[in-house]
Length: 118
Image (cartoon, rainbow, N blue to C red; front, top):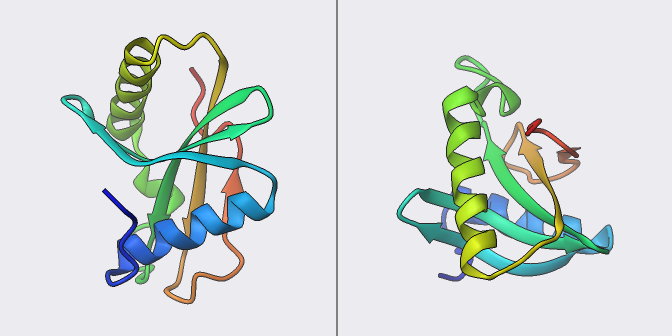
């Protein structure tokens, strides 16, 4: 599935992918899904595989973008990443990052490296 800039989530993912590429990461997969769930972006940072969760919160009344990645979501991301690694027979160092947008302007995202401790 390609990134869809015609919806807010797709636009945020597209902006995040562009931002991370500007930081030197290489895009490997987008919207990777399996029976365990989905990961927004899979990128490579030198010799490290990076699983990226992109979050957009346009209304602060509920929770911040960072707060929306709760324990249950973290566990789901870990299971999807494990499946990706096994199905691609990869043995690389990995990390989980988050790119957070707290508005719909998609400017100045917060990039949290190692957002999930495994």
